Amino acid sequence: MHQPNIENPNLDSSASSRFATAFHVLFQTLLVAAFAMWFGGFGFYVSFVVPVGNEVLGSTFEQGLITREVTVPLNWLGLFAGLLMLCDVILMRFSGQSPGRRMPLLAVGAMAIVILVMQVALFWLHPQIDAFVDLEIHEIKDDYDQFYWLHRLYLWASTIQWIAAWVWLLFRVSLWRTARRLSK
Image (cartoon, rainbow, N blue to C red):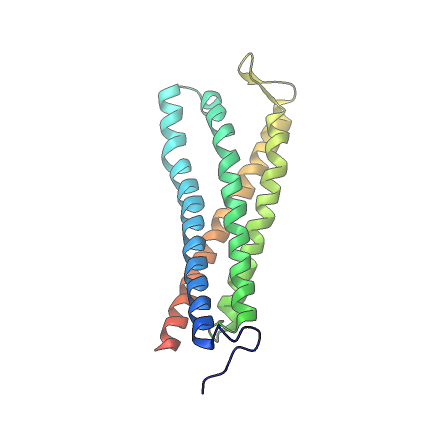
């Protein structure tokens, strides 16, 4: 049965439905693109750029100078993707588009939160580590042990975030498959 739109009689429910569908498609596309740029960029950088940079430059310190600059936009991409992941869970939960199974939805939400918490840690750690880098003489200044400890924390936060992203991806794909199956 056709329900008239009370707020705007010129916008009937089928137009409203088309708008909601278009918004959903646009949002999901943005989510996938942001995730792909961040997660793919992170994986490519760690797997190829760092090892090749170490080899070509002949110095982990010199490669670290490049990494120091690249991680800034990578961290912003991570924040953007993480916020979209969290919005995705909220939209699924409150729009009624959550495909029946609670466990995958809870896992997707939990992983989005882990990704965002680790991202906050990375934003906090980056300037702490940066303070130990002497750009004039190209070496670590002051307390190398403290620099090493902070750098290890950064790597651990990145690793936890990377694992959470894989778990998020696994459960998010599961939710897409469930939604598709239910829509048939």
